[in-house]
Length: 466
Image 1 (tube, rainbow, N blue to C red):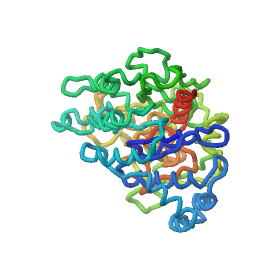
Image 2: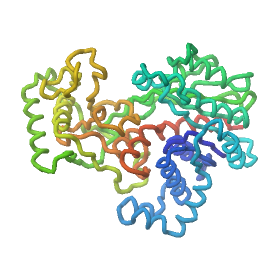
Image 3: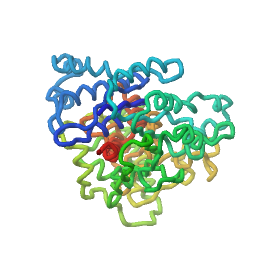
């Protein structure tokens, strides 16, 4: 069954839908993806190629050799099977910016991809920076914000719906959309009105069984569904009026939350380098300073959190079912002052403590004005992802710095690697992100968690049962 993925990013929704298997065959086929960012496009092409050459249990061997470091990317691309599959993938992964000027081109490619099928699914998440709480906060005094075209990229999604009337669509966006306004108009209400215009679609919640859900009922809290991350996103499930049986289910909550420790199990310890300093003693000095501050701190709790729990079987099976070498696990370098802060904060987090930036010892506070009070912007600027909890939201900002994504092991003194962030986003270990490291972080943060996408896809599959 064809799936059309728009605003595809690195392919989180792709991966989830492609992983629904009936018998021995995938139920859904990614017929076309649309994405504008070059590195994400290369990731989509690579994954589509590998998917075509692999089975659910057996990875394409040359790709395995690439992940294990035995083949370079150019050598992988030089194999005859890969060349053929990659050419096919490039024909279906479209690098294009969705907008009014490209609507006819996009429509033509979707028409070809659907290829006359009556049963198909449209999925995607229009870029959300204009709706996110952080994005709105950062641009509160920006006079160009109201005119940002990203406010209305959902209209490109809407144009596809009106042209093609898919039986089912899935639309993802940030929770901040619920409170976003544009020129006095509530954006969520406007989008809901546009999507259900003329009564052609019923918009349903995947977490509440109610034919008239409240806006908050569309928010999926990922940590309730085996995702080791507190990621709260709006998911709209649209079903064309008169299609299907009119009966569908909701996502099934997990028995408990999956923690950072459970998600990162099996990843080896790696140590950060010190930026702007080639002296190897700088790392030791930063560590010693951190432990000095820890020895002087008054820790209120003498019970350390569990950093070695029993793995979560469902997540572990999803992440590692095709055992491969670990890639993208090289840490970025940090300034010596940040290393000290990271180790100090991780040491406190082991005992369940998470001080605000203005509560740090004076020598560990950043050298910024207005840092000493509770009104300091972003008081949680430095945040340890604690072992015993789901992580906070992995967002694209992780590409800029690691302050909000500090590794919980004080001995490692660093932020999360790309692979660790990908684990928290539930990308399997055999999922490779193309481009430089900054682009890899950005792709990971912009994605829908594939394991959540799988659960959504399983509910979508039920709608097509006759």
